[in-house]
Image (cartoon, rainbow over all chains, first blue to last red):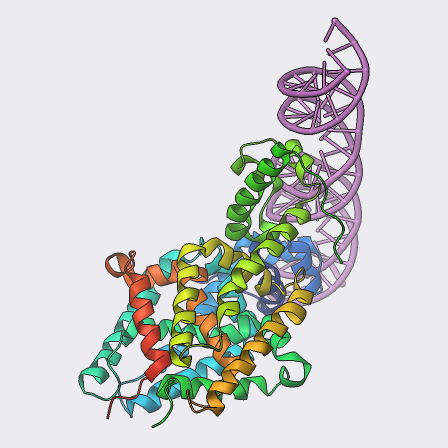
Length: 209
Length: 209
DNA sequence: CAAATTTTTGACCGGTTGGACAAACGTTAG
DNA sequence: CTAACGTTTGTCCAACCGGTCAAAAATTTG
C-alpha cells in the first residue's frame, strides 16, 4: 500500500513537474551517478537548495521518475489484446513501440541506463509487475500459436526481440545516425525502420519463392 | 598515424593487462563517471597511486579499453563474407553475435554505456571505421538480394536488428532473467534465444501455409 | 493591512574523487 | 658496495558533490 499523497500547493506541483522534466533530460543523458543535482537544478532554472526543497534527496527524484515512467512505458504491451487479428495486433504493437522510441527517447534511455547497471533501484518491479504482465501476454500469444494464427515459437523471446529492435533506435541513436550517415540518418530513419521491422517480423529473410 | 608505442618492461605489460581487466569489470558495471579509480585499483589488487603509475589518467584506461575492444567486437561482422550460402552466412553471424553476448557481456555493456551517453569518446570511430565496415557489408548483403538469395529489405536496418536482438541478452541481462524467472532464466536461455532468433530471421512469424 | 506560511537564497559542511609528489623500496648491473 | 633504474606507497590537495541550515523574500491567509 502507498502512503497517502501529501497535500501540495500549486507552486509545489508546478515546480516538481519542472524538476522531473529537467531530471529526465539529465539522468537519461548521464545516468544516475553521472548526473549532479546542480545540473538538474540548472536545467530546471533554479538553485540547488531550492531544488532540494522539493525533493529532499537525489534518489527521490530518480525514484519518482521511474515510477511514473514504467506505466507509460508498458502501456503498448498492456494494449496488446486478444481481440482482433493476431498478426495485426503484433504489427501495431511493434509500430507503437517504435513510435515511443521516436517520441520518448529520453524515457527509453533512462530505463536502459538503469537496467544496464543492474537495475539496482527497480529490480523488484521487474520481477513483479513486469514479469506478470509479460507472462500474461505470453499466454495470449501462445493461444494464437495453438490456434495456428502465427508460427510456433517462444513468446517471451519474441517480446524481447520486439523490445530490443525498437528501443535500439532510441538507446543507440548516436550509433544509428553515425552508421546511416548524414543523408539517411535524418527523420526518415524511423519510417525505414518501421518498414524493415514489419517485414522481418512477418516474413523473415527467406526469399519468396 | 599513431605515435610509436613506448617501450615497456615485463612488469609494465603484466600490470597494464591486470588494470585493463579490472577496469572492464568496473566500467561495464558502473559506467565511466560511475566508476572510481579506487574501485579499479582495488579490483586490480593495487593502490591508487600505483595504478596511476601505469595509466596517468582515468580516461586513458577507458580509451585504451575502447580501442582494444572495438576490434574484438566487430570481428564477427568482419567475418561476414561473400563466399558460401547467404542465409547460412547470416545465420552464423547471428549465432556468433549471440555467443559474444553470452561470453563477453562486460564488453557489450561497456559499449552500450558509452553509446547510451552519446558516445562522447568514440563518436569519430563510429562515423569512420564502423560506418565504413557496415557500408561494405551492406553492399555484400545487397548483392545477395539482387541475386534473389535473400528477401529484399534494408541491409543497414537488418544489421541493426541483429545487433539489437543479440546484444539485448548482454545489456539487458537483468531484465531478461527477471522476466524469464528462476526456472527459465538459467543457462538455457541462450539456446532458447538462438532457436528463436534463427526462426525469426529466417521465417518471420507468419504461420506456414 | 498584518500574521502566518511557503518559497528562495547564500553560506557552509563533511565526504569523496581524480590526481600530484616525494620518499621509500626493490632489483639489477658494474 | 653502490649507482641507476623501475616500482610502490603514504600523504596531500583542490575540486566537486550531496545535503544542511538559518535567514531573507515572496506569497497566502485572516
